[in-house]
Picture 1: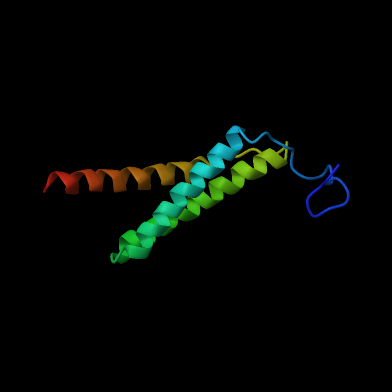
Picture 2: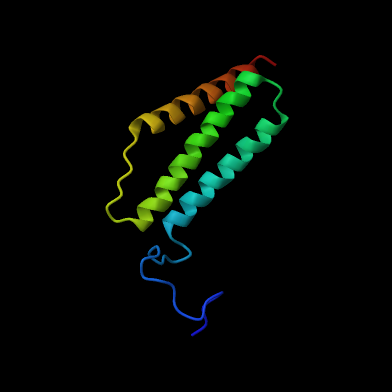
Length: 106
């Protein structure tokens, strides 16, 4: 059997092997795409406060993505940071509301 970059199978201590169509990969990909999109907006944003808020949202997404990945690796890991999720939801809701209001004024 061929193992990329190894002559022996990966250690059993590694993450559980998941199929390509696993929901974990879908979630991680979605978080990554959202964070990347926010990064593009931040790079063109000239409003310091908005840029800071977007950076905070990216940090929250990064932490959530880490937790999703870790929960797959450690059977004893439980992600229950409702404060982080609530903060992220509030930030996204505020930004969405502001975008809607500003689009209605034109």
